[in-house]
Image (cartoon, rainbow over all chains, first blue to last red; front, side, top):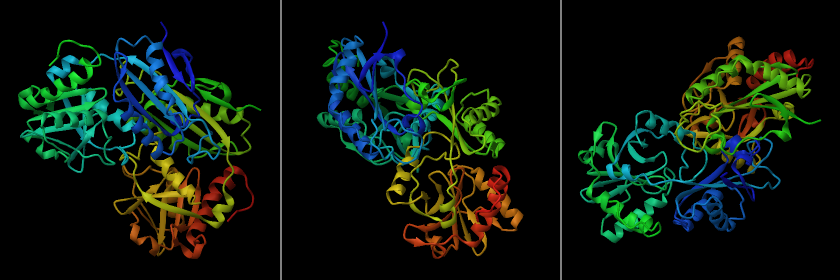
Length: 291
Length: 291
């Protein structure tokens, strides 16, 4: 059966979805996006995603007034693609709209381009159990990584370098500290304390990361929003990445450094179990814990 | 008459030109571009633009094999739009192509998206004579500005701030020095010497700037590729920006600093005249010097 996508107010077949090459998203990466996890019909942290989307729109001065309509579109895109009983991701992209190419924003009001689709995505259970390898690269991105924009060329180039080295993610280092990864946040554990880069212009304020903060609070694990210095990485007992696409993913190797003898750490597994309980188990209806 | 554009091998009417929202240019700003000036049918510095395009493609690992075909496409896009007798710009954008969204490059070989169009653009003679105002902002862009990519959100956001303040350009300051502007290079003159940021990962290697270097060499004006420090700006006798879209544009005000009593400087005008001689006059067939 053909996939249905949402484009500028209409639900249409994927193969009929076309945009103008004059879309400012295509000319200038002048757009923002979100990816929302859907656990068998339940949108996870929907409000947090929408709040972040609103912030990205506001910081880029894209005027999109129908933000309230997205809730209904997200639900419909799930049902129209028969994804209610599945683990799915919903992708939402909003650009400034279509206009003859010029750097400045169009003077006349143009309609933002709104593009939404959903797809089944199974959790990476095996990798979550075994842990993954990551690499590090210099953080070459812009200085407004707090905006979830489609200006993602550096992310794709660096992620590809990770993929070339059979690694799951590329962790960025700026001024000697870990900022985040190409599409995940990075957290490390040393003597029982979780360290991660504080929210700033240098990282995206991760929604899964915030869920981890709440889990840590419940479990009595202390979180310190303080950056991990590159030269300290080998002193860390555990390392993991978080994100809508990675859930809670243990890192067992970083470049040539083996972390925790190459197995996911105790606290990481504890956090995974709690995350599983409030997401896959609770919302997905899974009976058996994976961890 | 309808405008003709070139899209993926075909010359088609603008209103029939559509791309997929799954184009990696739209999802990830995973593409590069060039803008080539055309003086009444003569493509200016075509080889330099093509060499830079090849470098951008190579640095982003986009495999585009038909680079030799662009020459003929550029000429046809001019003639098909009746621009042979006019001053026109040719815009060329090449993205990695269309694929289901994923950060890494597609494993299977996909065809790059090639989009080319041309439009009449008159030179800004009055502004070139009178000079323009610019503003400065922190350079928030990524660290590979040597790649002419469509990852231009920071450029558009900052250019808009310039436009909001009735300024012609936004000059970027990084670590206390002028790098370049949102879509121009920046050159300053102090005691007869031209200063500008050296080519590096922080700026685009401007083609018009290189033409200015040659002009300076011919005129016996010394060029020092050394960055202008922010705190030294008021000590500069002259300031100008260069680029395909700006030609040689004198800057007479930077934020609140009035340069050279608010009129284009002598050396800037000398460079403008020479630039005019080898471009508009020679290639455009203009008889009378503007400067």
